Length: 294
Ligand SMILES: Nc1ncnc2c1ncn2[C@@H]1O[C@H](COP(=O)(O)OP(=O)(O)OP(=O)(O)O)[C@@H](O)[C@H]1O
Image (cartoon, rainbow, N blue to C red):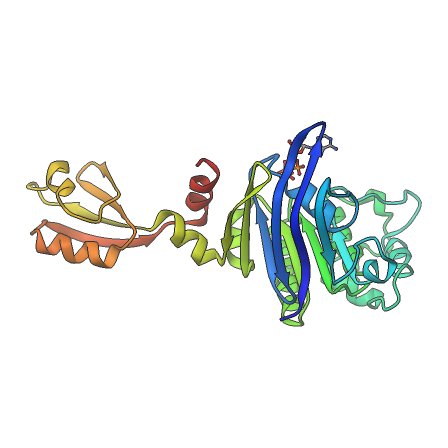
């Protein structure tokens, strides 16, 4: 598969402190990649370097095979950053048209108004939009040039539920047409449902990289919980192989394990009295906390 983004050993320092530290990353075309990490992890700095807005202190960045600052590369890129700056005197449709004029193959205005759900606001002043509507205008602007690579920095902050749904549907449809999407978000459930790949950064370093299920499976395993009979004690459970953690909530016990199938067999073998057995996967939230608190 063709490579859309390539970072080779990229570092960025501010006043001697590394915001991004020896990051290497290859992103293939047609994938949706979520960049996760706590505040200050280096996500925005990474995206700014991929976009050519900041230069790495060391290392190299390639976007669509070229330098992100080249005009021919910029023509194929769209970005929705945290701040949307609008010209005060321009209406929504005029604002979108202004951005359309920067590109060689812009999408039609009506299509952009539709996917950003701003058809009803086309004649409003852009500066008079609500916060959520301004985010959607930012999305329309990012899509104006029908980009091959789209960057979304915290895109759904302030959007209501139906706008979010339409937004993610549009993003997934774009990926289906071979476009590459890189997004940052603090909403882990969104990353879990929309991304093909999750890259976790902490202190400027890559700490995990994989599909959402790989990230979840690789860090926290799964949990078996059941209502325990009166003969079951923590000591008894400690003797059983394959349990990573034991937690009680009244007479219900939760056992963490990397291999819940094998653990269940062991529990039966040891004659553990169990009722209402449940097996659950750990969530992305839990995996994320484990990764960034290591
Ligand atoms: N222009 C700058 N000058 C000095 N330090 C900076 C600058 N930009 C970023 N930093 C520092 O680099 C580190 C990474 O910041 P960055 O904005 O990339 O994090 P982030 O992961 O995007 O965080 P958030 O989730 O809060 O948006 C932080 O410690 C930040 O203070």
